[in-house]
Length: 184
Image 1 (tube, one colour):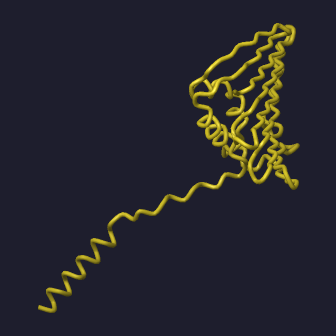
Image 2 (cartoon, helix red, strand yellow; image 1 turned 45 degrees about the vertical axis):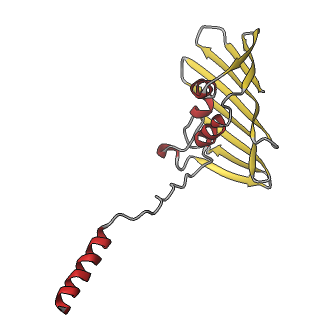
Image 3 (cartoon, one colour; image 1 turned 90 degrees about the vertical axis):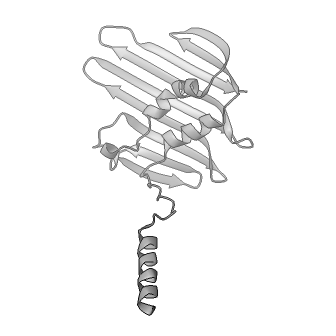
């Protein structure tokens, strides 16, 4: 009888040892500020909000009041997704420094990358301002993009943003594009 109980207990222990655990998977620690994840989080807060958007191309300005769904917001902030530097090929390409209220990632002089710098300003440990600078150039083409997002400290939602791009193709005049939005 004792042998039967012993084998039953042993079998139960083996079954429980093989059962999957309910532990949460460990989150991957990213080397730099998670700009892509941050923008996704902020877009999720904008559902139902409208934006007063100013678009300017080579001095010709247009003002519209729009309401975006999350897919359109992702299109609007495409430059911010492009500025995300958390990719394996850039893992050692940026110097990171901090001040009491800022986190700054700057491209190392010997490194190659489009994103030249990203600066995040914090108030009470929450980002209230994110800016980046992109530069891409080759023999025939040059492009510079500056982007900024400002968050309202009390609502912790995007308050306004600005994206400016200058593109220059060899033998053509430069194209200047400015997009600014006020979320309401």
